[in-house]
Amino acid sequence: MTFTDVILTALQQLRENKLRSFFTLLGIIVSVTFLVAVVAIIQGMNAYVSENLAGALIGANTFQVRRSPIQIGLFDDETYRRIAKRPIITESDAAAVIAAVPEAVAVSMQSGFPTPIADIQYGTNTLGDVSVNGVTAPYQVVQDYVFASGRPLTDVDIVQRRNVVVVGADVAKKLFENVDAVGKDVRILGRHFTIVGVIGKKGSLLGQSFDGFVLLPLTTFESLYGRRKTTTVSVKIARAEDIAPAMAAADGAMRSAHHLRPSQESDYSVETADALVEFWKNLTKILFSVIPAIVAIGIVVGGIVIMNIMLMSVSERTREIGVRKAMGARSRDIRRQFLAEAIVLATAGGLTGVAVGWGMAGLIAFLSPLPARITAWSVALALALGAGVGVIFGVYPASRAAQLDPIAALRQE
Image (cartoon, rainbow, N blue to C red; front, side):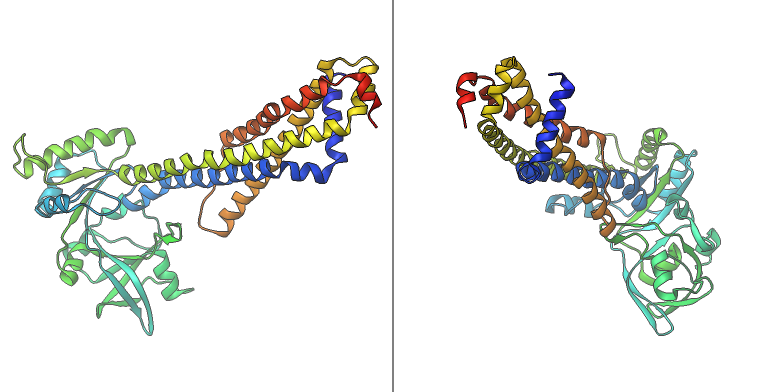
């Protein structure tokens, strides 16, 4: 038999035993579906965090000079006490950074921890749990904000402590719906503010919106809330490759401004959003370490089922094997035929699992905030697993078929 004949015979066996083939492959289908869908979601999340989260939180190609380092989770007591002794970042620090990094696209100051949450009122409408931030004008450049309407905050707004505010897309939509928010007066802590701009939608991650905030001039913010325990300086650089030397220059300027000797520890932090991205990648590494175990269990179970079904097929087709051997088929021809059937069977399960996993990942992305990104390596791995299972668990049944004595096989009823 030619290779084509072998494949066609294997496919014919699948068609003749559809239900049995489906239940035979169920373990492989479920395992491959799980592999493709979960990897797609994790890869999508990784890409989203790397491409969007860091940029949404501190801006693209941006580093920050902060009183406390960026950290996911709580500080231990010793670290917290040490950070609490650090001085607050001031305007003179920002001026030192500006002088040290003249190539910066923008250098801004913004209020830090604790970020106040307030009710925003317009007429009889009230929107609660809105984040209120005090910023200087360059902050809007740092964050790459695109304005849907109106204008950004200006240096004049900061100097004159104007009662003006820029709102995020969610705030404008929920308070004003189909009405342009620019020019409307809102109340924050009983004080009236005029909306001068609405920022375009930034999106969300896992249901957490990046658009539920308002921006006040930093001077106005401090007159309303007082100075925060932390103030942050953000520096936006034109090119990613220039961030490292710019950070080094800012670090040197800060050490000089704080009169620190070479042996003294820095009483500030100069950081990018790498801590956030690294935290997420470490989390997904844990998930990736669990996935192989779950997939392996399903694959092994599916392989054992395939082996048993193929052994049953050998028993059912004993007379067929005897006839083929009597007509000149060699043992290796019989072995090749049954091994090909096992491989085709397992590969069909792998293809079905890929299709179902692909569809499931797309459905999850459509119905939930979880992004999904199908990767070529996960599809290739799924197909390789399917074919590999067919080879590993199909060898024994194929060998059993090849070893049958043709005379005894022909006597089989």
